[in-house]
Length: 347
Image 1 (cartoon, helix red, strand yellow):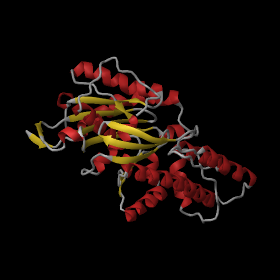
Image 2: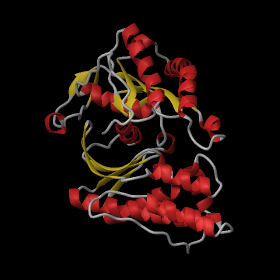
Image 3: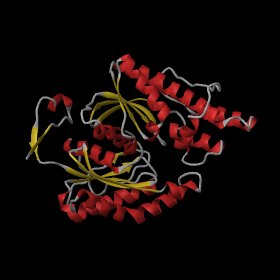
Image 4: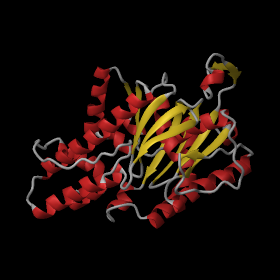
């Protein structure tokens, strides 16, 4: 028997320890264009994390094609699961709980992972616990930073989401602000496509911006609350490029990153002040952006503790899903075999 500290409900469990066996979760992620399966111990330790990426497949189309993504998930999921078990050196019977992503995401892609998880749950008679993909991104930090505990403010920035979230507990969240139009990753991809960088746009713009020079000013959008809007800056970049096709692309990318980061920083600082919390967590694929990471690190000088996931855990992966699923499981969450994919699932 191993002694581990459970902090699912901070008010009830923070002062006591519960004696229990190690809990092994099988995380399954298929919300977009990565087929991933991971084996996670006690929510924080990766025993395996296998990712089968479709980036090369979708690159030729300039973005993810949902039907192609779903088909490739079907072809990959059994193989990826087998490999994850082999690397972790366990069998299906060693698993305590199966935790698939059931939303948000592409409905066809989600259905592959959910259907596989339900069939597996029935076949090996193990509990099924659905996981919100957004909660998974937040949980990636629990793997990277073993000491991290709620409460904290999380800035989640990804291809499909831009949100400021108050994480009150491992399974309790409050939305503070969100994008009113494009997600930040979507804005990156659209701008990258216009300037000829292709897909995926975010990493390519980040790389090119390192060679850029300051000087290009772009509009910022702010609201009285903590919401974001990226459509204005996206349109400004597109129009500027169309009017000046010979404009230095590196300078343009740097100007875009400058404006985007400033908007993120100002709203995040407002959120920290409003909540009176001095712990900030970054999450999501765009949190891998070098410029954004360095800018937020400077908040440490203001007494803010800043946590960022390992780069390998920023983008979609099943390890983060297995971690979030663990906290759902020990909080008592269970799902029936009627669990369905919810493409617009909210946190």
